[in-house]
Length: 264
Image 1 (spheres, rainbow, N blue to C red):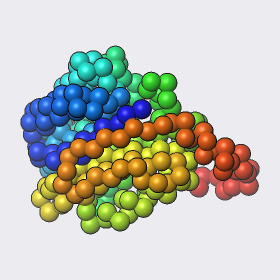
Image 2 (cartoon, rainbow, N blue to C red; image 1 turned 135 degrees about the vertical axis):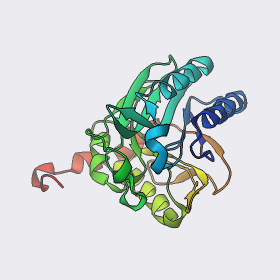
Image 3 (cartoon, one colour; image 1 turned 90 degrees about the vertical axis):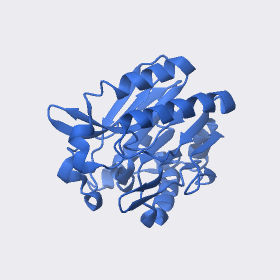
Image 4 (cartoon, rainbow, N blue to C red; image 1 turned 45 degrees about the vertical axis):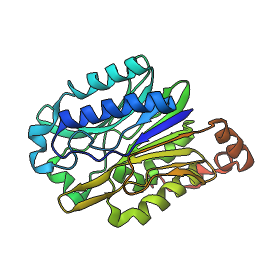
């Protein structure tokens, strides 16, 4: 499976401009690398313009989702559509969406863990359901958003349910880049899955985002890593490696969950 990651420099508060950037990048990426999946970052339509987010949010996803559906169908690609601000019943959520090659929405997730360091809880509503397994091209996958990465308890169940690839879409600041890199490697190793992340580059206000999107294999080896300024990276992964690693180090059959504390 070939994956292309667009760690785009987001134009703050400009959904139309950002959609045009994604459209143009996708066209070039399909021509140059022919990906099976493209991945976009967190809040890619607006960036963290939280004070204006209620005005800029996409009502019920009626603009962004059809845009991604048309893009997927036009290029016969799967799209892990990052996340975007969507307004539902007066509340604004940080919503991720996955579109398959046929343009069908196969998964949608509202970010559960809101970031206190960015004052997200003041402006956004938290999701009501933890991430679940979904499939594209017959491969079981999971998807989390940025701060979710710090919460291993929502990721482990995905692996237990057979997920072989975990996507992480983010706007992770450069000031905590050390955490960003190391936590991803840990999640790949402990869950014996590929971790594919997309973190944007650029700045907004006082925040500089770190880029350094990564694709990590189930051994915890980094296959490719972006920089703090380039916007695009691409790599092929062999999902069969997951089965091999899980057989060689049988973590999941070694578990003794009846001895574990519940709720932790």
